[in-house]
Image 1 (tube, rainbow, N blue to C red):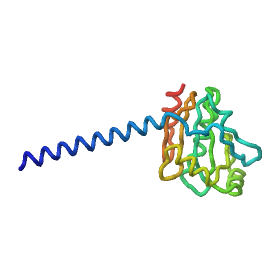
Image 2 (image 1 turned 180 degrees about the horizontal axis):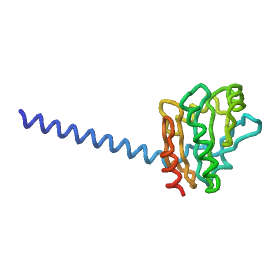
Image 3 (image 1 turned 30 degrees about the vertical axis):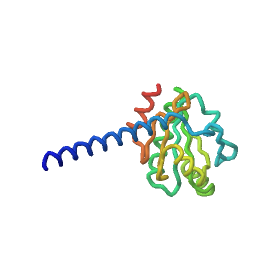
Image 4 (image 1 turned 45 degrees about the vertical axis):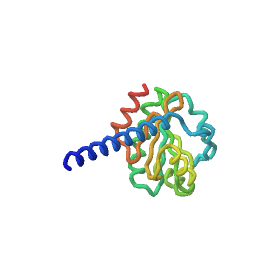
Amino acid sequence: MKRRTLALGGVAALAAFGGIGTALWRLRSAAAAAPDGFWSLRFERPEGGELALAGLRGQPLLLNFWATWCAPCITELPLLDRFQREQRARGWSVVGLAVDSPTPVREFLTRQPLGMAVGLAGLTGVELARSLGNGNGGLPYSVVFDRAGAVHGRKLGTLVEADLQKWAQALA
């Protein structure tokens, strides 16, 4: 009886590890490319004009989904803005897509101007974030694209300096 229980437990553990490994492999494989139509997306800018993602293709891109009502988002914006200034010479672009209404975003940017590009994504930004791997739609959410336009990395939650440095070194 004991041997049978141990054998069944071992088989169950192997099946679980195999399932987890397969799921991670699929996520990694599916993560390689941006969703269809991604690089043709355009967003209104808070200051007027348009932000076209097509113009950012071919260089490392850090895309950050944020909102004015999201305290962790507001906390990381100065870090993202500084990263943009420091990495611009290396070809990096940082874009903040505001998953918010235009008026609060404009008011926020009046109080705290940002040098990085900001696009008004509204609620469609939640769906875009989901298509980029953010299954639950939480904020803040960041996605890094390499020069070939493939997804290099993702993070749900507040970024820290170590995250940015790791991505900068990997895509140098």
